Amino acid sequence: MAILDGWTRCPRCTTELEREDGHLRCPGCGSTYYANSAPCVSALVEDPERGVLLARRAVEPDLGLWDCPGGFLEEGEHPLDGLRRELLEETGLTPGPARFVGIWMDVYGDAPDAAATLNMYWAVRAEGEPVPADDVAELRWFPVGALPAPDELAFTTVEHALAAWVAEQEPRAY
Ligand SMILES: [Zn+2]
Image (tube, rainbow, N blue to C red; front, side):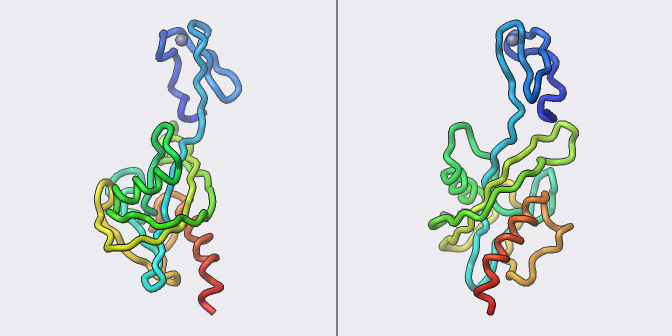
């Protein structure tokens, strides 16, 4: 329950919270607080000539490392709407049809109370030239055989997602 570790009192009525299996319960007002993983969406923007588009992070955590464009879903937002919104915010690109690649679990940063994340990845193609914006310092295309080293990648999920994406490309390389 890392994300709820510092919670001692109910944010609604200030009664002392009781710790139960995987959640906190307030005996005062009956509220229950769950420690779910935060859902995130990311795009593997692919191009037959240039490879995959990665974004150098302009913010912590993992400032300066290579990430896939993406981010946290908003409340009630469909994951594919979130994917489209994040890609537009960070690159100016509008994605075409999305091909699901996989889901990987991670943690957002190194803090003891860092949020657990559930990371969904789709491969997409997009017309036009990407322009870095929002929390992205730089965008660069990486050929399948020349991806950044693992220690240059943000988080652990980016490495897993790229490996899955590369495995999908291999039949085309022969
Ligand atoms: Zn309460």
